[in-house]
Amino acid sequence: MRLVYDPDGSRTPLATEVETADSLLQQTRGLMFRRSVPDDYALAFRFDKPKTRDIHMLFVFTPLDVIWVEDGTVTRVETLRPWLGYARSRADLILELPAGGADGVETGAEIRLED
Image 1 (tube, rainbow, N blue to C red):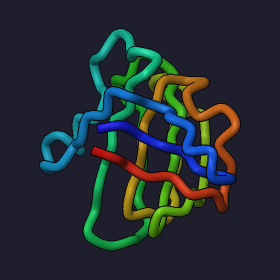
Image 2 (cartoon, one colour):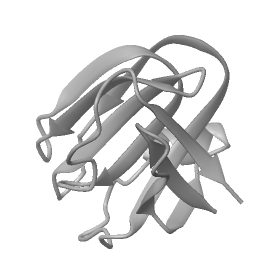
Image 3 (cartoon, rainbow, N blue to C red):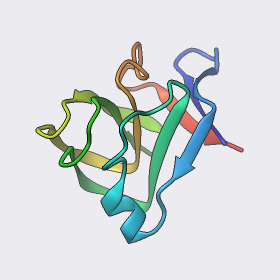
Image 4 (cartoon, rainbow, N blue to C red):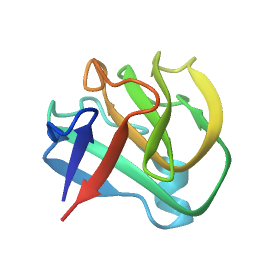
């Protein structure tokens, strides 16, 4: 699976190694306790319907770029600091990438997971 950012039809891959956090345990753990995250990696949290969702950085050792997506459209992009970062926004898909992995991603653009 890969993550594709499509602001203008260019279909730019942001990550070629995408892991999904589908269970409650996987979603709760996220990227906690990992000492590093590969440059071409993303962790995807998929949900059935959009609602306000929180991301915390407790026990996360590296900064992350987080993208909130609702119905395939980017609604928020934020870089969160290790240990102290926290943010919330409405989404049905949340993507965590290594810091810098979401550079250039803008709200209102399309983003999607492809097999």
